[in-house]
Image (cartoon, rainbow, N blue to C red; front, side):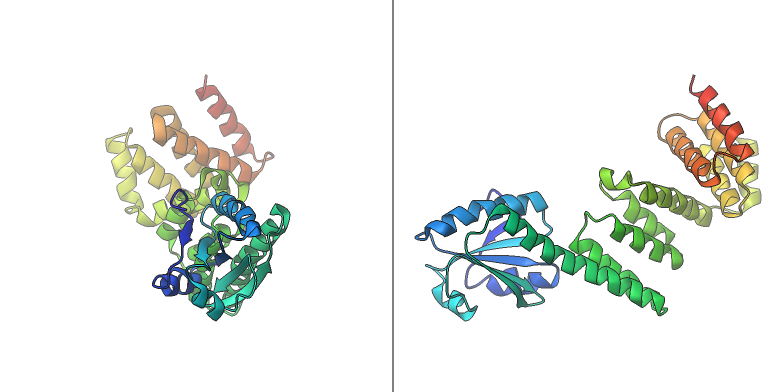
Length: 287
């Protein structure tokens, strides 16, 4: 099992930590098996393949009952193969026999859905009753339980924004896998949070304007000024600064400003005169 980072072998010594303690963080599936039982040998590679496919969303532990028969009996195992799911130190589900890949996948999906969905529901319930602190904690736990569900970082980031924890929301969204960042709602929220963070960290308005007057190529000052203007709903001034960055800048700064403009276009809508004007200017700048 050493070839997989998601699969471990149980011993009498490591079982309390490997299985019971880790089950507080997420589902731990324990495969009770014997090298003398043919169905166990059929099931094992399928479980390992699924553990790698799910990439850490659950922990797979192999327990050899020939070596750990007493521990297996203490865990209520009476036939092989048996797969038990542990959550918060106790067994919450059991699967008997060398089932098909389809059955195994449904069994695993159920464990992950129960973990992430219930915590997300609890987070939204806590927010509805005004306990945003608990809501953030529960949503963070849900994100750890299922890091590939885009709903969870979306709701968590929104809760962080409500607490004005813009830096944490921004860091969370920027750390998402590339495919998650491409989800339209997450992409729009990431842009919005980035502006909120920049505006909050910005120096006073007069200081920003003075910095730009002294150095028109101070692109960071321009971006912060755009953020401050955007938060104040002065879209024209924000778009003007972003377009200046596009025309003066290069690399990451230029791409960030171009992305910000496109998100503003989408937010304001195609019928907005400012969108029509700045879209044309942006297209001209690319030629």
